[in-house]
Amino acid sequence: MGWTSLFLNMEKKKVLILGSGEVGQRRALKFLDAHSKVIITGGTVPEKLLKLGALEKPVNELEKWIEWADLVVVASGDNDLNAKAAALGKNKLLNRADYPLEGNIIVPTSFSVGDAQISIFTGGKSPLMARMLRKKIQEAIKDADLLQIELQHYARQLLKDRVIDQKKRRVHLYQIFNNPEIIKLLNEGELKEAKSLVRKYLNKINGTTHDF
Image (cartoon, rainbow, N blue to C red; front, side, top):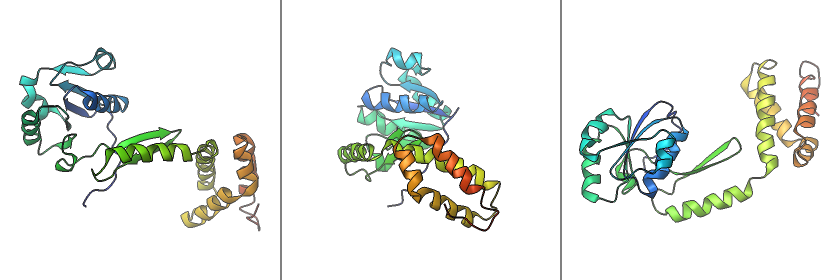
């Protein structure tokens, strides 16, 4: 399988969505949330999407709007229309909701927990299992994990001013991650106190000891 996961910056990119059903609406919301320019054709567009900035265009102008788009999403219930759009958009970024592996872009099941964004792709074998795995992962991520993300970011910024060598910075980050006192503070929701402990540790870096 030649697929690999990537995150694309879709801000101000032009997205044409063929189909205004459930799948088309989900795709539209995703790209509107990413601040893309979204046009929907092939069906009646819900008012909520229009209020969020989506535009509705007649399907008889399909070729024109495919030419306009950076990304074409094929998600209508009309197989012939889907095939036509896919053929017209073959040289574009193309997401096919009907036959995902026949496009060149997959829009996976994805979700955010705090600053962690997670996507799941089963190779098109089971959208149901993608949703089930999503639920399991969401249940496994704890508040302390999200606070650790904040703490690691904080520590990385401080380390960049103190340690040039990236490998050495990584050693320090692992020590912070595994420190029992910090783990206890994060489990108690005490991010501010954890940051204070990190500062005390990092202030020792130019000395002779690097341990907590």
